[in-house]
Each structure stands twice: as structure tokens, then as C-alpha cells.
Figure 1: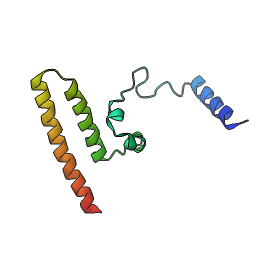
Figure 2 (figure 1 turned 60 degrees about the vertical axis):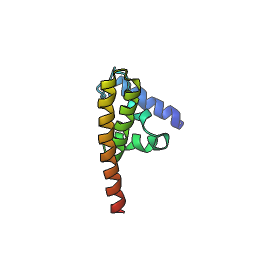
Figure 3 (figure 1 turned 120 degrees about the vertical axis):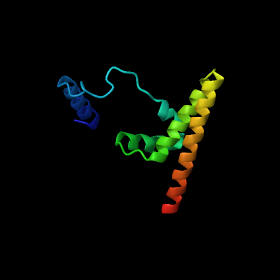
Figure 4 (figure 1 turned 90 degrees about the horizontal axis):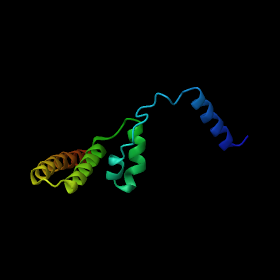
Length: 106
């Protein structure tokens, strides 16, 4: 039996046994906002860390900033844009402090 066939058989048995029935987010669309807000060169490592629940705060902040920037671009209300930009500035300050602390630890 080859590797692919073995894998397919294990997946089929798991489905039959209901092992995938209680997965988080079942039946809901995937939220890929943070994934696409992350620079392409960081995506693979980011996904691994996120799935292991060990996301460094710097990466988390970066994703939040990018997500807010995208939201700001789509916003039509000037007041909303201003509030989003304030939050972006606040998070950028926090991110810069985290980066500085990281550099000092090296």
C-alpha cells in the first residue's frame, strides 16, 4: 500500500468514526483576514505559530495593524477613518517598542 492510499484510508476511517465532527469553526467560513494581512514571507511561519497557539506579540500586532489599514481604506466615514488611524498609530507605537525590546535582548 502506498503512502497516499494509506493516508486516504486513515482519513476515510476518521470521517466514518466522526473524529472530524467537533472541529472548531465547523460549518463556518474561514477568516483569512490576518493571513492576507501578513507579509507573504512571514505567512508560513505565522500559520505554524498561530496553529500552535504561540503567536509572538510582534506578529500579532503587525497583523492587527494591517487589518486595520485595510479597514481604513474601505471606510467611507471620515470620523471612522480617523478613529481607525488613531488605533493604527497606537498599535504601531506598541509594535516599535516591542521591536526595540527584541533588539536589546539579542
